Length: 333
Image 1: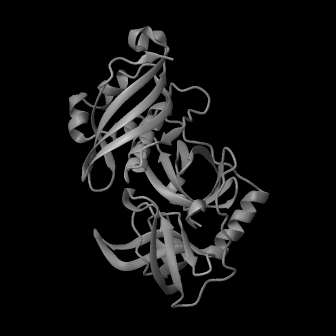
Image 2: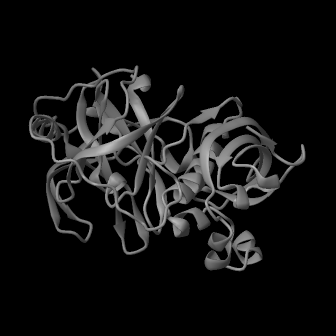
Image 3: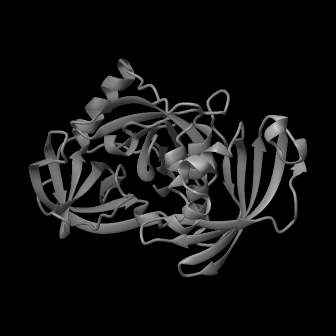
């Protein structure tokens, strides 16, 4: 079943983030609406690589969305439970919490027909569970013991700034199935939000591959992908936010940094090695960029970089703390 759970990397004009989702067809992924709402760019990651996604249908008042992938994916295709499970039913949540690799947590159904409001209006017919849920789990499946989807993970409960332990919510699975079927029959694709002067031509998508077996390599790749995705789609605030505050200050702020981008955009990203432990890591990366000759190093229009990034965990996500060129200037490609 793990092969059918995916990780989202979503860029908005002023922010970016990750979430979870799951396959119901080779090219269709169910997730929570708040994972992909107001997106300028959506990429979907599996162990074998990344693909672009487009929102085929969304209902923010039900916190549901259906995303179509740019190509078919190999992986387990989930089915939905035909009715809400009874109280006490054992369940498990699958997803990518707090920047960690794919995780599995157990619990039970502790409430039915709940109503919650995140500020956009009440969401009805919500399932309550005591399975451990964290940021990044949103959109992943809440499964019964036989592997059917009882719900789509939506949120944890908070009282002000305090987190209520053991209380989390999921959108009803069989209601999600009805919405997904409706969107497939009558799709209403959501146009990506235009952030402005994005230099990347076409769709701005670039592939990510991770060759390192370090347990944080995939998460480092996601952080760098969000940075490059922000550049390609003109979401400069989102890209800038991938830097640590100290590095942001060294650039002189957002405007000074973005003025240096010129016509540059990312074409490919490969994480070749990750070293270190704890909250500070280094990542060796191969990065392909394209740009007009007047903006390229040594007049290059296509550059093949070998970059070593310093990465820092800030308690919620990996951030770029610095970079250098251990192998010298980029080669022309």
